[in-house]
Length: 176
Length: 176
Image 1 (spheres, chains in turn brown, purple):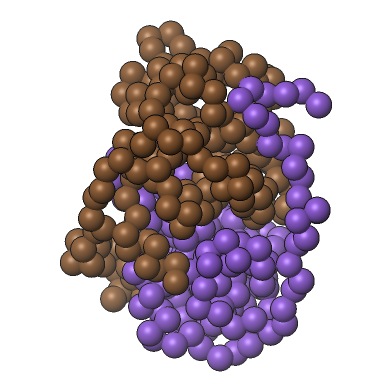
Image 2 (cartoon, rainbow over the protein chains, first blue to last red; image 1 turned 90 degrees about the vertical axis):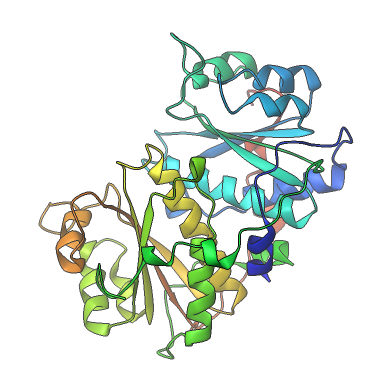
């Protein structure tokens, strides 16, 4: 059941050095290509990075929050095409969510690295840094990078009592 | 298996009029609240609408493509607060994706109705119309509405060979 997956899922940033099997990577590729998108325009593209040198460089995309990619077995760079669809942010985020849930089901841990609206340093966006690193054409933008691998840390799921039930309304804002 | 869910999932816009059972509503609610968000900021709020009169109003907020909501026994209005997180669009999308997958898992069908960047017939934004209809405070933006219900008919899954596999690249972007 999907809910049992959601109950135990946590962001995982520490990974075992072991690679992800080819069959699992193939399944991950299939699932991102199955991601639904607005009007079926599929404005996304994906770069599956397993090269250790590139993973280390992806780890330097942002000053904070991307360093863990250096130890990931796989990083999936999610690209959007704003000319193809005005809601590419949504479409890329759907794919990222699906990718993380499929990874979880296959026993992999993962964590989202936000790239859109994030900086590499003083004068460079995280997007420009990755564009240069992975030779991404100018018409595409980098939404996020999902790092993953076999987990080398365990975290317990969030308790039901910690969920923000005050954010749920019935029929009308403010009504419960 | 979650992957099998992805393989068969299609957008469903025609529902039978059977209401969604309270136990299933509880599961969908928990799934929404378990959606991960950037930096744990959870900039979303959700309105679960089952009142047929309010649902009729939701259906006209976006004349192009929103009409199917009229026959949905449940509409989940997904709102985000840009003041809490600059990546509220991503966070709302993660939750929308998760509620659609949780619905599918429960034997329900669903379809996404995009609201952000979309307009009402009068030319004002769909969000402005919904803000009035649902009594939303000005700080909230509406990302989308997910219409949910028991499917009236099934739609054949997409075949693996129909997937746009040229959109997956390995290690660096490869120009085709």
